[in-house]
Length: 334
Ligand SMILES: [Mn+2]
Image (cartoon, rainbow, N blue to C red):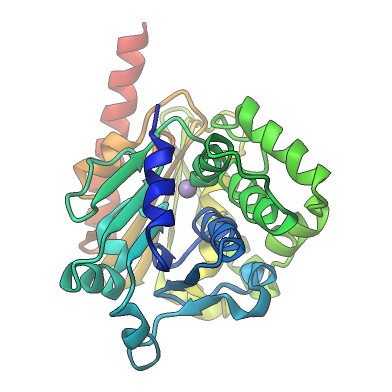
């Protein structure tokens, strides 16, 4: 059991509090930060959510009164130099804090990590609250509220709901648990508009993104009797379709939905001879070991890495590692 009272003590003894999450933030990191923000504001704290990226348009609905800001030294450094506490959500890897991580170290800020990624406790954080069994970091923030007897308001629930909905694939992935649904019930009772949140996040695809999807389906390849599906998105495909980097989000989840496919692997060329590799598993095979073996990491069934090399050697290397891992896991099962 995590000692959430400790977190509350830290909050109570702090006045200026920074909330943040990883670069290229997702619904879990942003939703968790927003839920906490509304709790802290209600308690009279001076707090800001500052992160390294541009806020993705699909999450702008969370940004009431401009509470979520993109880090800019000239605007924020003064405020940041006087904070008492930083609470970081869903980070996975300290590096993903970028400049904010450097500032925390440089200013020796008391920083608390709340995360459900299976990571070693990072010493750069003063406290680590880690629960790998939580479907979302948002569930941990919910646990915190419960254990210190906080009644959620609609804004807090909206953040928590967004976090849980996005990290459970809208309550469909294998990490979805009883608590995820309980959170949904409570959120709906508090007036959260679930259909509106879903549509805002997932039913706003651009025609460019769909045209990129068409190209992917064209190059989709299968291995291990159709259990492993993989595809490459190179710069040329991106340019030809007019899609943006972030438009590839969700494609590996989509490929995993194919009948018989247990693991989907995406190779996305983010720079010349630099690939982001994404692994998604339906649950039969653990894939974060493979991600780890090429310098990445993540959850058991959703992981990723960045790797360098030309397309042919990168795909050959990663696929051979993935295949050996799957075959080995098969053997261990039988
Ligand atoms: Mn998460």
